[in-house]
Amino acid sequence: MFGSTKGRIAAGVLAAGALLALSACSSGGGGAFNTSGSSSSSSDSVTVGSAAFGESEILMQVYGQALAANGITVNYKPSIGQRDVYLKALQDGSIDLVPEYSGNLLQFYDKTSTASSSADVYAALNDALPKGFEVLDQAKAQDADSYNVTKEFSDKYGVTSLEDLKKVTVPLRVGANPEFATRPYGIPGLKSTYGVTATLTPISDSGGPLTVTALKNGDVELADIYTTTPAIKDNGFVVLKDPKNLIAAQNIVPLINTKKASDKVKSVLNKVSAELTTDDLIAMNAENQGANKTQPDAVAKKWLQEHPIKI
Image (cartoon, rainbow, N blue to C red; front, top):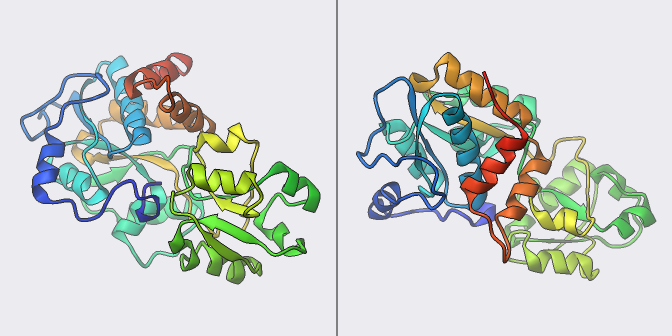
């Protein structure tokens, strides 16, 4: 979910900044914080980290609180930074576990991979990971790019999938970040995969309010919006199906240091992932945003009360 197209985790974080991020205190208020620079050697303790944005912190809390509820001692290191920084933290033992996104993680380790479906990405990811890392069961929940249209447009032209766009008779404009003009899943992919011609209307807010407004106002016919954005549901947008897997799957998956992947830890984390859906992420993100913002630890606690994880 948080590749360069989202602009959430800037590339090239300085080493000093990384060290500061690793020593920062939890804003979520969940659990003890190990400041020693390495995780506990105890087999019944796990240090969970997150990237530097709200959804990752929520997932850190969901996985961490589920472990704690089942007798595992949990430490939290939120908002570490970009992918290369928190993967180094996983490598050196500063953290043991981090919630990840399957497609982007695969791209990080294998830039030549062409896997796109959930199953293919997951299989390729297991082969691409370095020794000492493993991914546990992936969730149904995803946070990925998605093509959206208004319900009115969908009803008028009978469009519910990218394949249906071929029968639309009006010119198609896509509201998205400027790089969408060259991304394989952007304008070129629509043409090569689905035979659909479209032009880009550049909007540099990563599927945010400007993109949403452009779609609502009819300034564009389609908009690239990330699948867990609450605005999709709030505005009744129709997320177009992608039967040919133009957009690589981005399933939520726990990435863990193999030394900490005990049977008990794996059982708890796999049960969390089995319960977690994209709709859950949308709802939790909505709680974590806006004027009445709820902190990630409280959002996670509420979800776990509704989805108790016991082994």
